[in-house]
Image 1 (spheres, helix red, strand yellow):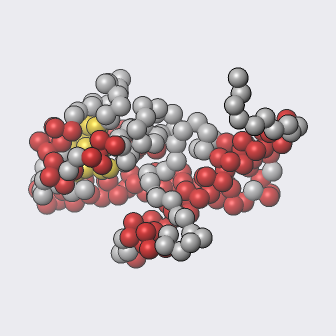
Image 2: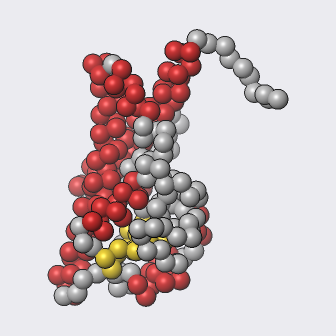
Length: 211
């Protein structure tokens, strides 16, 4: 019933292979996330930069995001670090970069909310697009997007979320895309769900909203 190749190795190598795959992905994501921090500081469009750099035949930079989630990539590298901290400095740094990216996103949203409050004199409603740990799924395990929303709520911000793959959440108010224009003053796009790509977000959001 197994259609793929069965490769015989010892248990230690098999386990290390799984950890290696996820650590490799984490390191590559960390590079993209670190680039986004540098570009934000320098006033460079990171998406345009990555598109240009990826024209090189041996360069394939991933897209930055709000961090790294899921119960594999966000977790497995720590097993390698715990086993051999002295020789896993790059892996540990990648984990720290990706964890920090979530904190950075929270601060960016708070800054936009504070700007709205200063200019309008009223407390903004923040709409976060996406709660899952990656596009087009309903899995919230280790999700940086979920962490962003929960953190903002805990600090007293008025936050709702749009998550097309969930009907409800016990702690977070969910709204539909059609309610975005009426409810949002600050919009944070946290997960690149298919529904957000296929609709005209700029038209739905309107011109008086901070994105």
